[in-house]
Image (cartoon, rainbow, N blue to C red):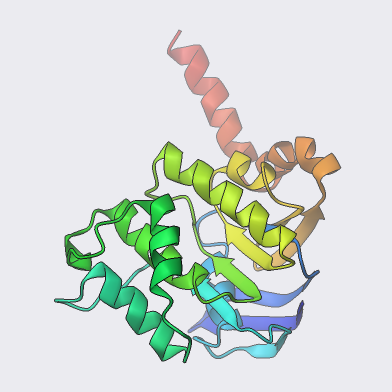
Length: 231
């Protein structure tokens, strides 16, 4: 489904992705985790050809690639339903109003209200609805659970598991480790511009300790020192 070979990306003198290699099997849910600035969003934007890069990225997705970025954009004076229509027409897809309203039974959005008036969580739900209705083979979701309440997060997890049953491939990032380990078949740890390790469910118990060793071991010493001072 996805093969990344020796991908490099720099911004000026700052090297963000460093000869990164990654292979993702189709019909699975993949998680990508890494500290802030590790390059998760940069990698996603390279995969979507929104950034130039060195190396190669091959994606096999005959029905298309869906992408939820962290920064969402909505045109002024466009209602929720108009936004969904716009996204479908832009992809030359049929606007199925029955399916839209069925999907909205999950998200409960006021589709006749202007999208810019939505809350942060509602805007994310609207963008997700437009992506999910496109029936893409491969879906990339950057920081999926940010801004969503508990109910919406549970609904999305159930929906993503159904996508897997329909042989779709999902790649999502999150800073909430449990949100990935709950549903992912594999979790890929991005550190210092490279995929440090790929974890299978049997290895998830070691994931947090490995992240501590790689990224915050020195901070754990500070926490220990503070705990002694503050007792």
